[in-house]
Length: 325
Image 1 (cartoon, one colour):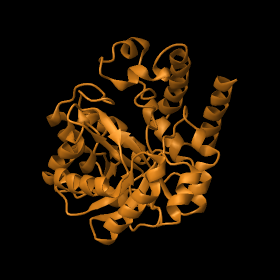
Image 2: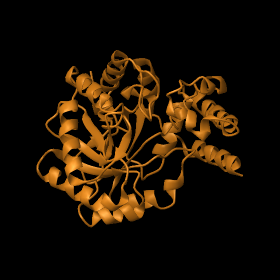
Image 3: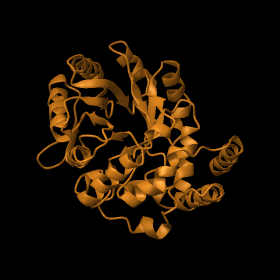
């Protein structure tokens, strides 16, 4: 039985969608052999992970056309089709690929129209609940792209439209054309740049925020170790992330131990504490939490309900200040 009814739901921006505090992130289930892959992934594991997330009450899935170059969307479509649950499905546009699997960016109206039709087919839906511009690139095409999405929203192919990785100036440009339902920025203990201007702007303008990488792509889960970081598959994009190599890795492992200490008092993992830290910010509507297996989903499920006490949040804050010193 779904547990959604017992969870605290949050309305996303100007939409009618009531979201669970965490959603299922489908980046890693795109599989390997593309520029931002997480290494090989078994589709049956992915589908089991999605089914478990939905059974536990998670009511939204976030994916993108570019994840696995269309593969993630296909897997999400298969999983939802074979489930009794009907979650909200969010996807993204603007990152496309050539026959040689190289990625390029376009916000041209004709390109976006092609992307919407392709995503609808892969996801096996008649309308996409939230359609987001993945990156504001090319910057000069933002107005054309946003106007195109608004037209397709009015046509009923998209229920709501949002942006991802936009700065304040770019959001202001979009708002002159049509309302922004949501913003999807990176936000975690180790990536806090959006706190200064972007989150306050979103909050002041009624824009919902779903943050990605709250655990810094697995770094703060409690499972990452220097040995595991060194053994990441060759096609795992995290090999290029400075947080996964020295000198930052040792510092980050000390942070994980603090999260482990706080979490142990509540019977939750460091990753659950990391997600709760982001949800403590009142500008955040909900957080995206990835999962590659049913077991991983079960381990992160406590993030649906776990919240940090103010003194725990302050303790983490002091530690983060010492790391920055």
